[in-house]
Image 1 (tube, rainbow, N blue to C red):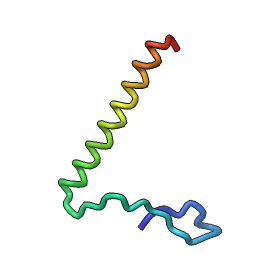
Image 2: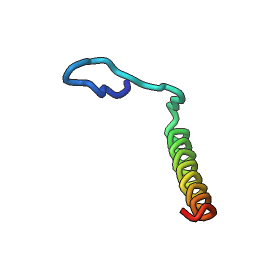
Image 3: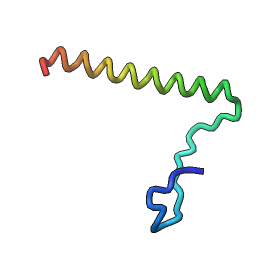
Image 4: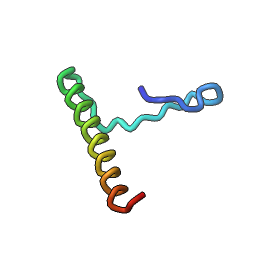
Length: 54
């Protein structure tokens, strides 16, 4: 599994394989955690930009 960024020229596949969950509930939990982290990062970036006046 993984992505093939150079598929027409190369069949090499790249994957991080950091966390695998065979359980669908765990997959959705990881998705929710990822979305929450992104929302928190965007919120923090907006707060910092507001403080800096950017």
